[in-house]
Length: 241
Image (tube, rainbow, N blue to C red; front, side, top):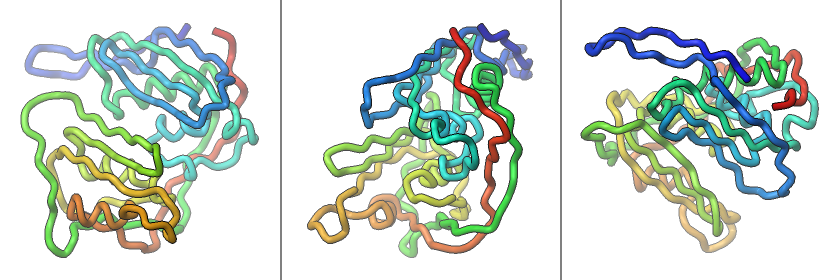
């Protein structure tokens, strides 16, 4: 069991307590050999991961793509885990609120030690297309959420109340290299974009690059730039529940 920490954040209603770790977490080895993976937050401070590799968990904990996590033994890619955890909050945590909780979980249960680094590499620049953005601004309240679904040869990303910086981060995993937000667009947006994951030689739908331009009015330009990396210094298989 993890000890919960909280930080007081001033608000018009007094103090809002933001958890810094989960107060309870269960980690089990997944042995289904399934290709489907799930990582999500739910109301009541709940965090659920299904069939998730440690590398995927590290990427979510530090806001980087999996290819930006370096070193570590081969099992961090091949072994998969089911995790059910809960933080002391009645709300559904945002990605930013989740990260310190997930980092604390990795530190205590996986004995993760790491350091950050930077290197020059291939990146994509996310820009507004030549004919302008086709995005719809979010209106009303609600929790920010972004998710991906892959199946039947198609990919899909759905966003609600999502900033362009968050979309760029999410696209990094789909594009295979870091994506940097250079759209200049502020605010939060709702969107849905679909593309084909079939081979280019097949008469399928658009690629993710074409879909972004046609459906959202955005484009990805290949360039060079600084790439943040998380370098694993030490990690162990998880301690018992």
